[in-house]
Image (cartoon, rainbow, N blue to C red):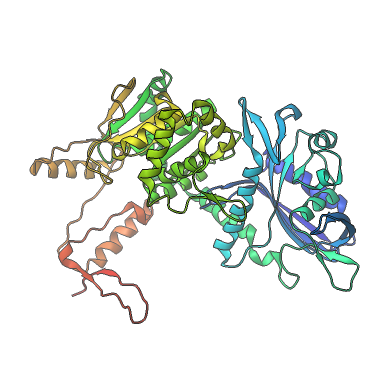
Length: 549
């Protein structure tokens, strides 16, 4: 069977063109007599991972393919000999920066974007481990070894040598690829990341991502990625498309971006269901796509983080460090990275910094950072240095805060000290308090522009009117305006303790409109809930179910 090379991904993109170039590298470097199967995926999206975008993924198997390579042994001695490559798995980050915008700071490769330096080395490492975790989560098996590379499309081989030096250690002590390279160069750098295995009593070595008895194709990497591609293509039924268009128009009509351009804190306020979070997402998307900004959405809601990450992936929003982007994090993760950047915590044996007691002592760490800044121990220059050194976690052009009313004042003040109020947009819920009962005021003594949302973007018209009537009957002080285009909505009140037929009927109607199960809500009174006792004897978890009596 001759060598087969497949390219997967969207045509007409820079990543797809790079995949075609990489295919040519394989074809030119592998003899025609060699059997094998290679898959190259361009523009891959790793749903569910903190780093989701990977420009190129390549994996494959080769039969009796070897290259003469040089690499270092454990003592730093230079070795050379034939290395058999039976299988491999790799990911690549593409950079198109010109030579003057690429520099090496010690062992860290940085590129310049919008007059800021961005750490590409850290970005490449994050992609490597995101791919490993993605594979393990989808297959339930230990991931293949993943080689990671930075492909500097704007640098010639000569320019790259000028960057890393021309000694043997300089040539092999990195994972950078010039605009044009050979297959031998590629696997030469792969051997730097993982030293080839010396076959006992033989004069050759072996470099594999999985053992020879396993097949790299058994992991079905391509199938896992294509599954989520199909989900992305199929998502957005007619009802959702209609709602998205309406909400987009409402935001556009209210001219939020004009207020943002006046160097003021922008406050989007309103009751639950008025679409404040959707507006934050739309605003961040507009700032990124149309103004080239890097935006971070912060919330304490873990479920919301997962939901918005999926939404951003479907919107094809990039998460590269050197381009516009939108990301979402929990506020605790953000302040954790900030604390590490300011020197708190300790370092593990493999060089990873961590803070073991961050959550239990969360308030104390916030207070300490605040004191350092107020006392001048941490100055504005230190903050700017931090923005550069931990750019992908800390340095953002704009921060959008969800459920801002439920934050702590010290959290608010730290955000202001880092970004200033003019680079902050908040969603302020009127009566949605979970973390505390004290409303956090972000607008006090701060120039701001405020909107009050009354239109309910979460529920259809009939549901809004039902809730308004209920609130009026019981003097709850709640009134929202329905969106006329949001037709429909139904409330079913049933005294049957086993309303399966109703569920079946409504679910079928929901699906007929192109919706999914999450468009429905079922509520049961506590009197009909049976709590099963924890079955500690067999280790099974207890459960909650509605009564069937």
